[in-house]
Amino acid sequence: MIRYIVLIVWGALLVQSTFAQGRPEWTKQTTFEDCANSYIEVVNATGYSETNARDNAMKEIVKRRSLASGADVNVVWKGDDVTVEGSHDLIIKARVIANYPEQIEPGSWRVYLLVQTLKNPTYTYENVKVTRQYSFSPRVFIPGMAQLHKGSTTKGVLFIAGEVAAIGGIVAFESLRSSYESKINSTHNAKERQNYINKADNMENLRNGFIAGAAAIYLWNIIDGIAAKGKQHIVIGQSQLRITPYALPQAAGVRLCLKF
Image (cartoon, rainbow, N blue to C red; front, side, top):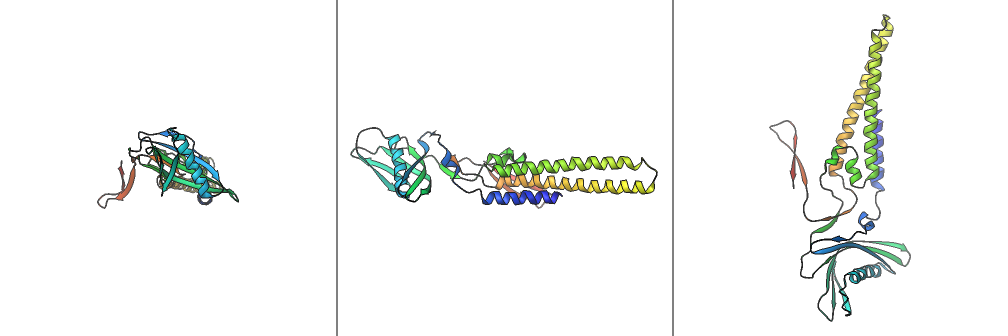
C-alpha cells in the first residue's frame, strides 16, 4: 500500500511540475524597493506590438524618476541598458533586469519590466537578479514547508499529505499488531493462536512498510527542498548559501559543506 502512496505522490509531483509554468511570479509584485544606490520596481504597459509595449513601460519609469526639469528627453536603448538624454545633463540611468511579454489579443501586447534605476547616474548598480534558486532554509526538515516557501503549493501539500498518510499507516498497523499479539495468549486453541500469530506478523510487515515509506518521503522532501527550483523571485545582493555533499572514504557517512 505504501508504494501506491509513493507512486501517487510522485505522479502528482510530475503533473504539478509540468503545468507549473506561466507568468513569472515577479511580474505580480508591485512593491517598490529602495536600495542604497538604486530603486527596483516592476512596471507594465500595453502597446500595439511587443516593442511598443516595452517602450511604453520604460517611459513609465522615466515618468516616475524624471527630475521634472521640463526638458525634452530621449530614451536610448543599448541592450538592456537604458539612458535618458536631453538638452541638459543625463538625468536617469537604468537597466532592465528581466522582462516578460504576453500577447493579450491580436494587435495588443503587455510587457512587464523589472527595472533598476540609479539614484545618481554616477552610482554603481547593486547586484540584482531574478532566479528560481533559493538559499538553504531549515524549512527542509519539516515536510512540505520548503516547497510552500518556494511557491510550489501543490508539491508542498503532497509532501505533507504523503507523510501524514505514512505516519497514519504506522500507527494503525502497530495498533492492530498489538491487538492480535495480545489475543495470542487469550486462547488455548492452537489453530486460533496460529491465526493470531500470522495476523500479528502481517500487521508488523505492513507497519514496517509504512515506516520505510515515511522515511523515504521524508528524505525525498529534504532533497527536493534543497535542490528543487521554485517560483521566480528577486534577489538583491550576493550573499548565498552553497551546500555541497561529499563522502569521506575513511569514515562511514556523508558530510555537508555549507559555504556562506
